[in-house]
Length: 139
Image (cartoon, rainbow, N blue to C red; front, side):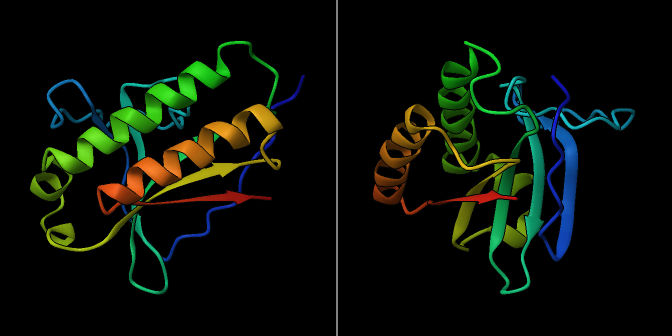
């Protein structure tokens, strides 16, 4: 099955596939391919949208249901992103995000399936309790 591709809907990219979650500070400047949801130890994109909101973006180029591990990978990636934000690693790496509202954004090539939508709904509720937004951008 061919992967689908997601358009970039951000105004300013602060970092792309550069922050690995082990140590929250390692750089992988040689990497040019998007890590994606399957790589739960990597922050895909840190950006700022046109409205000025800071985004920590995860990208899923695979169609939903194409991998039986996708739901677990998505949960793990959401938890990793939340940890990256909550433990201050995001603000240390990108000081301009400090004290600002941050949104985790899932970029995907199609509307989430029912199983994925349920995971997203739970994540939205839990993240909101910690002051983190969550949104889905699908093409």
